[in-house]
Amino acid sequence: MPIVTPEKYAEMLDTAKANAFAFPAINVSSSQTLNAALKGFADAGSDGIIQVSTGGADYLSGPSVKNMVAGSVAFAAYAAEVAKNYPVNIALHTDHCPKDKLDGFVRPLLAISEERVSRGEAPLFQSHMWDGSAVPLDENLVIAEELLDHCIKAKVILEIEVGVVGGEEDGVEAEINDKLYSTPADAIATAKALGYGDRGYYMTALTFGNVHGVYKPGGVKLRPEVLKEAQEAVVAEFGLEPGAKPFHLVFHGGSGSSPDEISAAVDYGVVKMNVDTDTQYAFTRPVVAHMLQNYDGVLKVDGEVGNKKLYDPRAWGKAAEGGMAARVVEACQNLRSAGASIG
Image (cartoon, rainbow, N blue to C red; front, top):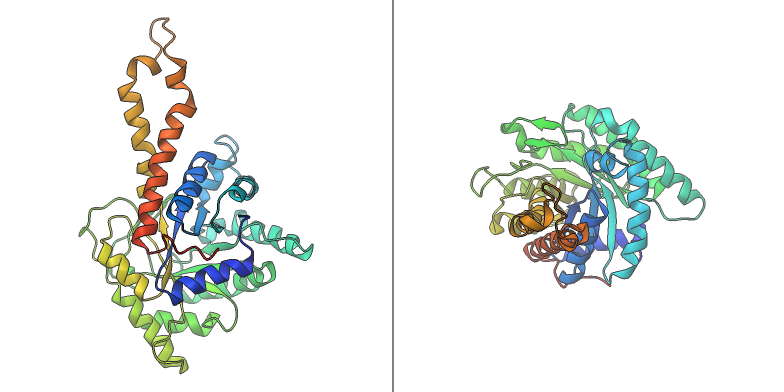
């Protein structure tokens, strides 16, 4: 199917929230990882989200070029073409963008989408993330309001982060402390600034102990009930229907999370869960196995020529893509989106 329209993307997210499932949002940094993500979603019968970080966008432009906008535009164009061959809905998203990279990443991409929409075309991306976790909440929300106005014009969904995700991603680090847990007051402040869906569509990454990177189950204390408390606080503050889930929530830093923790988060309104560390490993592990199992064939030593069929990048590349696609299927199963494509 073609990359989703803005209306279809909103339908995807609304359907997920209404039916208590979530979409894996798979980080990619190459055509190979993009193809692996697409295959994984198709194998699972799941719609999905494919995203690039600031570092991934840099890399996609060419390691010696390092232009986030050029890499993002190239990625979106390639994805739009190859996604047509898969029977599931795919949305494109840009991941964590801190304040110092807004002018070199999200704002130029939003301007491109605004121009495209003014010509009657689809936006380049379906959603963008503003990561204001490193600035005070008031400043975070002021910038979010400005970006939301542009997103509405560009028919793009804004994602924000309220709270702090610990660990490190793309050079952005945060300590593991009590700031990892968003409060009901944070949720109410967010709704006062951006609304609760009444003033424009946005997603919120509230934090409940999340940490980027690699950790074993039990290594970090997740408290999914924080999400429930946030939803309930906004319902009470604005007099919404009891039991409503006003926020479309996002789960960051989920590597090592238990199935029960993931399930609880989804029950409380998570519609998108970022998956990066696990799929990176799933992509790389088969490459290592290929190289070790075919050591003599892939290494040219003292004038030997090796075995072209074994060092052809397509040989180990197919294995890598297969490993990553299988991990995407697993993510869809964990988040209950497998078999739930809206067609």
